[in-house]
Length: 137
Image 1: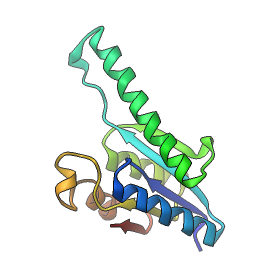
Image 2: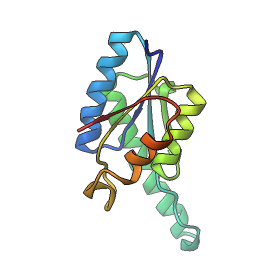
Image 3: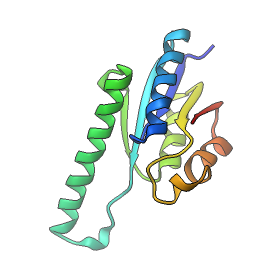
Image 4: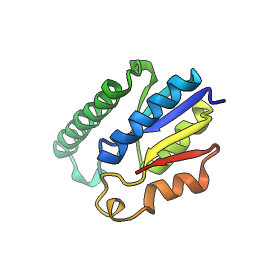
């Protein structure tokens, strides 16, 4: 039924459970599993050399989160996407670009406000997704 499953991963406990579910679904359907992690852009107003240092740290942290997702799911490097931007926008962009049949994500992420309620990122993905979305608690 599913050929391409997109896992949105941010390193939270909900995302780790979502990774397990996404891997099992991909194996059950013989589907390709793609992992996407989005990181917030670094503000331009920081100026040099602070901008470069902040960008370097943010990329290192984001790459670590993506590697953790790859380790949990066994996804090859070419199926692990690191995107800059608002998580919901990046997830939706990746789902459209990859023609995903299913998006799997946790109900709560690591964002300060987003972790308080199901609203921000996951609600937006559910509302605008081009395919079914499976939310994992």
